[in-house]
Amino acid sequence: MGDAGLIGPIWEPQFAQLLWDRGIPVIQQYATCGRFLDIGLVSQKGKLDIEVDGECHRDASGMRKVSDIERDLTLIAQGWRIKRFWVYQLRENMDGCVEEVCALWKSMINGG
Image (cartoon, rainbow, N blue to C red):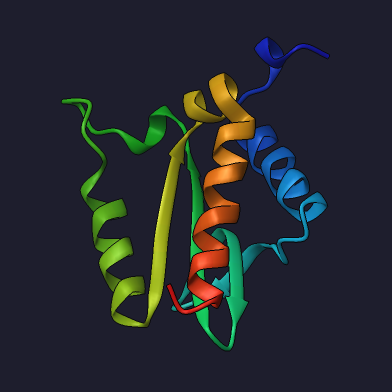
């Protein structure tokens, strides 16, 4: 199947699987702070929320929705680091997005 047919929730599991294949301990739909994270990574050294956002996460002016910003602030206050990807970023450069998460997670768990 070509990437052109993949939309919305299909990107999240594909991304999670590629991270898992790289040894990143992903947990899809991780429950915390009264919310479900698209992909959660948790260790004693850090917590990372990875979100995969489609167009429904934009407001009428094309900016990120206020509810997403407020959500991020709630999670940050609880010690989470947030990394958001737009679906188009995964579609256009999945490998680069995987590499970015791998590098960020490695930095977090190694005290960077």
